[in-house]
Image 1 (cartoon, helix red, strand yellow):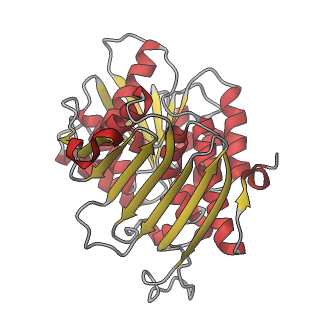
Image 2 (cartoon, rainbow, N blue to C red):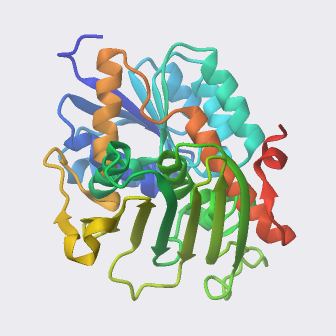
Length: 363
């Protein structure tokens, strides 16, 4: 493919996140969204309206993603359909040789993720999983500090997300575990991916406690009450001795920072805060007087959107991969690993015990 010709994207699924991808891609140089697919007519109408609003050409609309894939219009594809549809959509996409970026979670079950991994290994075109939290500028800076060895050998990772409830989606599909994989898969695969990156080891055991205490209890869908967790505490043990924890609360709108990530090594500590963008670093021998703070920004960001510019930066890296023939920055194996931890945490809550990863992975 010529590096001077526009890279033509198709987006399968143009709900909330699909439209966010439209906005990010429009802000990227040398890229255009030429086609969208969604069985939901109002979503296609919103996609056309959004394209008009941002001054982009109206994309060709399809009601079936398979027709988009067969159209020959696209050089790359984004999959942003509801979680439970990923396996079927990806089976169709992976039968082509189009590069694809699939939104998190890769799938809702370990078995489906494994199916995608197997299919991805049978093709030459790359598959990238949209775990974009790695690309949030202060988080990326934190990862760089950890990998530089500046805080020594990592011993503990602590992630807190205190935020608002789940947003409304088309048909409110995200109100039920059977559609999402559960809150700790749907939302928290991002954080489990970060834990895996920071620990740089194999997770061996998960212990979790959680419940649905506040959100969505007064909602009914065909007589059913939503069953998604709105708070949880999760501990993950790694085979190198690192321990990681997640503190999730989804009725904590009264929070200054939505996400706080702390990594402690035997020589120091580094923290990242969002949305403030602060990176805080210190060394043990200097104590509190030696702690430094900086607001981390990335001048390359052309659209900040929902995730502090991370989706834009991820697309920038995805385009570079396509142009240069590189490898995905976030692999299907990474996607499987993040889902497996979420599944283990959901199971730990359901069964009231710690869960080994050997149980979840069947190894």
